[in-house]
Length: 198
Image 1: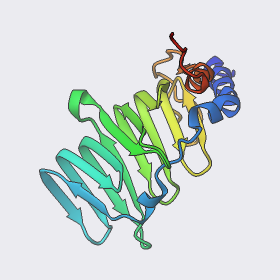
Image 2: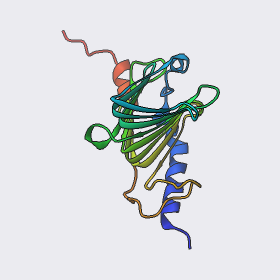
Image 3: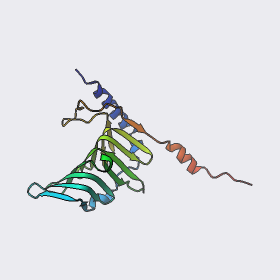
Image 4: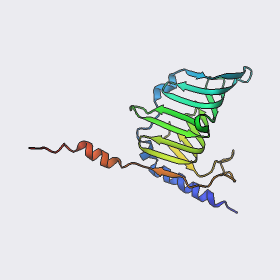
């Protein structure tokens, strides 16, 4: 029997295909970040050189250009080409914090969640459990948020998918929300000349 939440999740994903450009307008990650080195600070590290795995604990902060990840614990893998993937857990208030400057703007893309997965090569971010992602005044909330800064595809679900992409059972089924600020009103106010006073 079909899980009723799958239909809701698919519907939300379809909505994001339509309104995604509104949320992602000018929300490309800072492209210069891709050429920057990755720096990580932490309290304790366990490094497995043969597997290229670093397990970092205690106030971990990963930065790459304008991108910044803050977590309590992070597992960082590096492939043979030097690309980094990171799994981040907990942090201040029990959540991971993410931010990155948007291309051609001083605004930031900011997110929080209980866990996060970052893939440098694919340029993707997954926010898992109690997830929120803000860009300017627009905001997504859900149990799972996926963002690809190359394709500008965003997905939000009310439950975290399993390894095969199906909705996992037993998760929180609160409905995801999208908040879009009225940009047309903002544009009109910018274009209208101030009223003259005599």
